[in-house]
Length: 298
Image 1 (cartoon, rainbow, N blue to C red):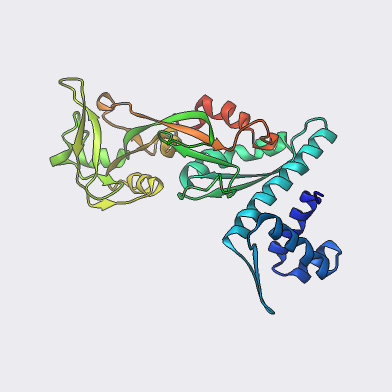
Image 2 (cartoon, rainbow, N blue to C red; image 1 turned 120 degrees about the horizontal axis):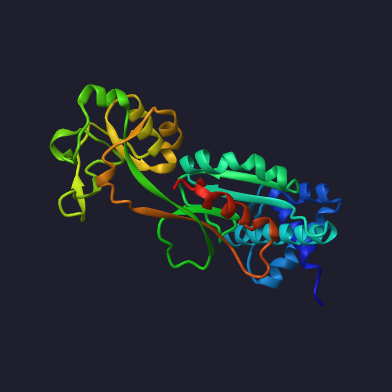
């Protein structure tokens, strides 16, 4: 006879969150012995140990962590499905969004106020980090990623693309002059994203794309740091367009050597677990609509 799996999952999640059988029992209004029996039945059905219990501590095994993540996702999907049916399709629930630090701050975060105003039933949790979130492992519902897609079972929707531009502060040009062609190797001190880096460029003589080694006094691994240094007139750099849109509009930075820009582009995608059971709260239609109009940093 099949037991109530959803109810058992809810009990296990309560145990994992409370850190004890007694704490979960108080939260659920059950006896600790009843909670222990439910967890034991789950372990017997799966044939694996989910919890390691001593007289003083309780911790999840690796299998318990996996089961807990899946249980949380399934219960959230079930709650949303029932709420959506009751509310005539209005999506509800929590959606966890993972985005790169700079792109998230400059592009994604400004969209959130309008999004929650139009979707009051959804709670957004946004995690800004340059580390890739494990969507399949349940660490995020939607992840915004740059570049070519790897062989991945996740569903991807293209949000747009971003290019790169050489920028400099007007004060630097007033001091050092304005170069008319990319003779950067010998005459220009670049601010580089990493030591020993190179820059793509287009030859004015042949029209072909070339890779030019550059040198500079400062190297940084963060685009916002590069822009901050350039805006102070330290030197010049080449960064993603989403980093510099506001500074260009305000005149704090100006584009440089655009005839030699190879116009290389980098795609931006939203990655999520798709399929017919995908909850409505994870749909990325809003991002597609807003970012394809240029919000991705084109």
